[in-house]
Image (cartoon, rainbow, N blue to C red; front, side):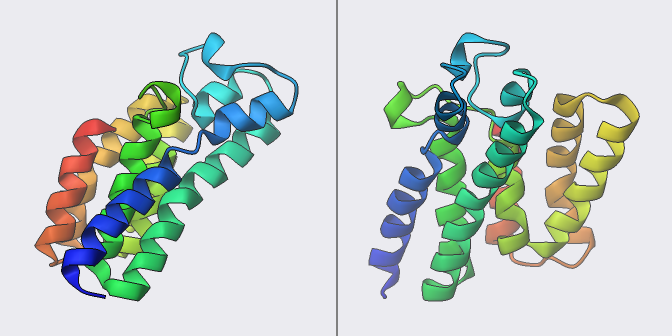
Length: 177
C-alpha cells in the first residue's frame, strides 16, 4: 500500500472507528437511557461510572481503548508505525468529535490510553503508572489523565522513543485530552 493511499485510509477508518459511541450504546442497551443527560454529558467511561454501574463503565473503558488500539495495530502492521499512529490518532479525534453525535463526544482519555501500547511502549510505560498513581492518591480521574498526558511525550523520549513523528503526535494529542 502506498503512503498516498495508506495515510488517508488510516485517517478515515480511524475516525469512523473512534466515532462509535460505546458509552452511549452500552448504557442504552442496559436500559439506562442517554448517558449524555447525566453527569458531564460526555459519552466516556468516567461518565458511565456516574450511573453506578461499574460493569458498564469497565466495558466502555475497554471498548473505547480498543477502538484506537486495534486500528493502530492493524494499520501499523499493514503500512508501518506512522500510519498506525495516524489511524489511532484519528480514532481519538473520532471519539472526541463523533459525526453521529453532532461532534460532541467524550474526553478521549481511554481512547488515548488505548493508542499508547500500540504506537509507543515507552509512552505507555510513562502514562500508565502516572495515571494509576495519581488516581490512587487523589481519586480524581481528570487530574490523573491531564498529568499523564502532559508527561507522555517527554517521558517517552527519556525512555528511548526516538520516532519524532510519534513523539510530536503524542504531544499534540495530549493537548486535547
